[in-house]
Every structure is written in structure tokens, then in C-alpha cells.
Length: 490
Image (cartoon, rainbow, N blue to C red):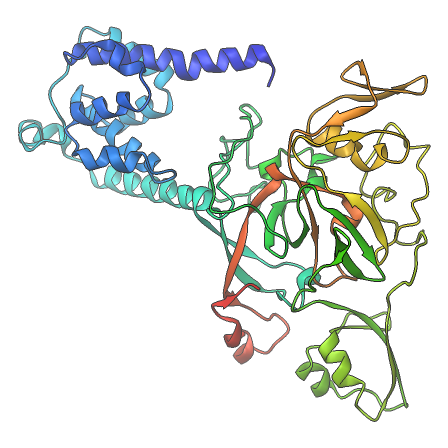
């Protein structure tokens, strides 16, 4: 949204509605200037509508305050004789049209506080609702309340892939807290309720790009910490062919391994942060190559040890399961498929050399060989707000995507010199914090090793606990994994 669009949006959505509210306040015998003072304006609306004072107190609570704003606005419109469902909807959805219209309309008068007993008795006939209207209002209230809960407090999420096994399983249903890191305000507010980015059945976009709001996050209980299991928007959805806005990109879930300012590396499969070995996740697993005496593994043993066989001759398991399996007489050897030492893997290229996850544009033909792979990576410095990076042929491919795609700058190389937004430079100061996310199932996870950093505006929330776990591969009587119900996320 450019400057002209921002000015027009401000006039349409702020100036015009409050000008209409000014006129309505004057009709109620209250000085019109009360309408334009933040917070105080709502307090005056509470008084004019006849709502008790505690409605004003609850209005100040982030998230649920919107419900109380709606309730007060409905009663305020009734106080001016707008009793029909159509009028109430028009006043709330199109205030820039109807509030100025009613403020200038000589027929519109203040009739008294709509929430008072006297008002309800006097206008009993006007306030009577049909069954259809009662149902409509109940449905709208339920949709608004559920949307607010999902946006500001807690949301359900399903584990779709095995990238977090064995910590989280395919079919786990989680509750994700928006409160821990602070809820984001919607960037694309015009969207179909409960549809993330596509409409069910028809598959079209569930949102409109007509209005795009800047990123803003309300205060949270804490920052993202290393070891947290985090739900975030998949950064690559910003690319062709989807070009999705941040809050409509697919939800991913990984474990945070690095926070802003950290220097992170992976050495022979072990993550190091600031030169210290990072704690390994409790359910971390990799794939192993097994050699037996010719007697195959007992399927019951594999099930008891929770060993996954995705085909291709590799078995995925935790270190504890591997230690137990080595003790079986028909197991000759069990070797983790971890690449030792640095060296590029053309069959499985990683960031920033992975052509499937474009992390660069201007140096596409000049990428250096970092000799990184999924088990030996870095070191890289994770960008931090306010950190200035020196940009050269080695660092630009690593940070260009963050500079250009996530922070909205134009990056060019002309005659061997770097230009950012038309200005020649060899440094850049970051505007956002970034994170490094990895799956616990290290050899079956598309994560930051492949597509780089996760910006702070992509963070959705913190995984809290499993409220249901469903095993599609089990028989009907064992579909529900009862032992995982209300299991906390470690």
C-alpha cells in the first residue's frame, strides 16, 4: 500500500466515520469533539447507549474488547432510532457512509439510552425481533466470537507431515497459543471466516487483496525461545505462483533452534549455537541403514520401538530406539545416515543454493560453493533488528531474500556494485528479527536448512498441547491414540 492509498484509507476509514460520530454526539447533547478523542470517545458511547461502566473496562482488553465495541455500537445505533438489522449492519460495516448520513439527517434524533429499562419499555414494538433475525444475530455473534478467539487467543492446528516425529505425530491435533508471543493483527482483514487461504470445495482464494494492513503484533508473554515448538507462516508462499500475503501463507510447525543474533551451525548432524552444542529435542530422530543376518525385523518390534519405514531402505528412529535395536541378534549393523564433513550434495541442495527454494536473484549466476549439506551447515548469523551486515559475494546470497522479499527493498547489482532502493551501498541494517526453524525428524524435514530464515512477522504462535491424536493407519478401534490426549508439547 503506497502513501496515497494510506492517506485515502485513513480519510475513508477514520476521518469520515468520526466526522459522522461528531454530528451524532451533538444530536445527543454532547460536544462533538468527544467523538475524536481515542478511548474517551468509547466511554461517551457507553454512557449514551446506557451500557454499564464495566463494558468500558472490558473494551480495553485486547481481543475480546472488539465484542464489547460491537455491543455498544449496536445499542448506540438503537439510541438514534436504528432498530432494523439492516441499519445496524450498515452502521457497523459501512460507517464511512452511514454515520455521516445519519449525522446530517434531520429525521435522525437521539431517543435516549437504548440499554435502559425505560427505553426498552417505550420502544418494545420496535425492538421486537423475528425468529429469522434472532438466528442471524446468533450466527454472526458466534462467527465473530470464534474469529476473535482464533485471532487473539488460541487456534487448533493439525500435524500433516512426519517432519516433527517422534515429538509430534502425523494426526496430532494441537492447540496453538497466540498469547505467548503476542497476537498479530490481521494483515488481510477481508477474508472468509475459518478458511485460511483457499475456499473449501471450490479451491479459490478465501481472501481479498483489496485492503492490506501493515504488520503489527500486540504484546505477548515472552519472546520466541530456543527449543520452543512454533507455528509460523511458510515463507516460500510469497513466491510464484502463489504470491500470498504473510498471514495467508501455509502454516508450518518446527522447533526454534536459533534466535536473533545467534551464530548457528550444524556439524555432523549436531546443531551448535554460539559455538555450543544445542540440546537435542526429546523426540529427535534420523534415518538409519540396517543390515540383518537375513532374518527380517519383527513388525511388532518396530511398532514397539516406534520405528518408521518410509521405504528406500532406511528406517527412521530415535537414538534410544537404535540403541535397543542393536541388541537384537538378527541385527548385524545399524548406521545413522549422517554425512560426515562438509561438502555440497547436488542431489539434496540446501540454502542458499537450493533452486527449489529461491533465496536470491541478483547473484543467480555467481553463487559460491559453500560446501553445505543437511548435516553440515553454516555457520550463519541469524539477523537481528538493528544489526548491520557487510554485504559481499559470500554474504549477499544468504541475506538477500530477507532484505528484498521480507523487508520490501529493491536489490540490484550494477557494474559490480550493489544498490538497495537505488542507493549504492555495501551494508544493510535489518528492520526485523529472524529465527532458525528445524524439524525434529532431521532427515525428513523441509526447514531453514533449505529455505533460510523465518521473519518475526511470520510467527503465528506457540504449540501448547495435543488435544486429540488420530492414527489413520490403525484399525477402527485403535484410531485414537488415547495416551497422547492432553499431552504437552516438549
